[in-house]
Image 1 (cartoon, rainbow, N blue to C red):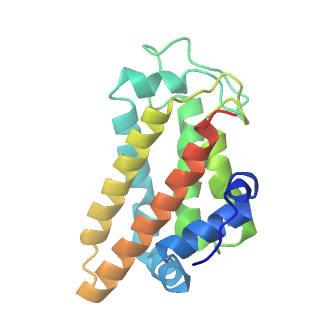
Image 2 (cartoon, rainbow, N blue to C red):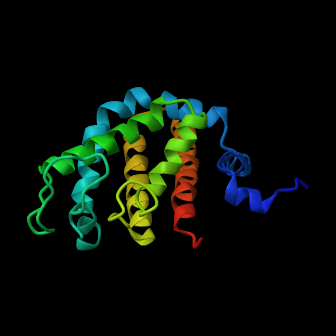
Length: 191
């Protein structure tokens, strides 16, 4: 039986990620499957981003989080939830961030830099990083990640991959999204 330092899981990001990847069996074959899907998925990123924003804008509980200024955005902010449209400059800015995130998932090496990036994805949706005004409840983050997961599954199933490649790719993305989920939820734990 391998001994795990549970206190270190909470304080050491690399240790936590190492434990999770080992426990889930996320390894080089999974990374290769994810990277192998890049050529198929990269052209679909804009439509996936649009689908995500269509979903986010269809509920007041998610759309309201797009009214406050996002960290790094310098332009005008919307007056309120009712005047906010998807063609607003700040939403275009945010869509670019989501597009870069999805592209990074399928192209970047899974090293310390990527691990920190995946961790910041969780943190920036809380007042702990980015905008102090942005505090997206965990239920909304879970809803979003579930939607993204389903959209990725549907996209992968529609790529026409052979059965073995399709299974390998689906399993790899499933593990990756569970890893991302952990790196989101850890920022919602009480200090």
